[in-house]
Length: 368
Image: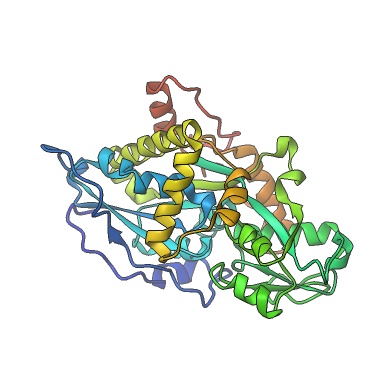
């Protein structure tokens, strides 16, 4: 990989061969942009000679590690004179396409798209290199139409995208209720409507959906529109912990530029440390970056409950990834995968040790 790389237009060509199950009409979101607000320290040098490192994330509070790290200039600080560039996404499958096409190098993403990207490429496209967040996912419904969990049958429930983490979680939950749903079309005892998080609140207001299984802040936006939280996904997990956001990297980029990857991981660890030590300031910083990305700030009635439902951690909670893979298999979206090698936590644990923090475990799914 050359050091000087022009910004490429996000493409799907490489992904078409590896992710046929997950392709949808959804676009990538924003083009990658330089972090022009973060100042490069005087005398800083490029890492690995790279002109840029391209980072992807969603406009969700479950990706607040990336939001805060960008807004606070932590990525740029650790990358020195190598430019931090960013692209935002609606859901995981489209981010996997971007990673496969070489349009981003590192990304914050949910577990299901990471699993699919890894397995569909026969273990060659990516590695999970760190954790970021747990929780922050809810089933929010119209209380005039749905008053109990059994009332979900026969209704229209939105998820962000076919094959994304919330889509898999909802299909698994529905199957446990005894509902039959075709995973591709979303038709069955419950109609699954794959809807961009940006327009889900409008779909709810118009009555075209009866509820949604979505991440924050979309869930709290629906509550602000009169919706009711029928189920918090964390209640379905032991200790109420499950991975909602991981950090992934292109295997080619990891092999070619480990110093750049380590710099991004160091910034991520610093971001989570600052978030957990300064929750109110971090909440404001995340909202500020969301505003910069979308042009609209979250009001307190949305921001506050959304933020309180998410925990931020460097631990990828690898054991729960295995469970989520089983959910995708059960839902009919994935053939039973071999996930051995999906994690490479070497650089993360190096950073954690240097910080005097506890190292994290890959649940037997690491490289080597």
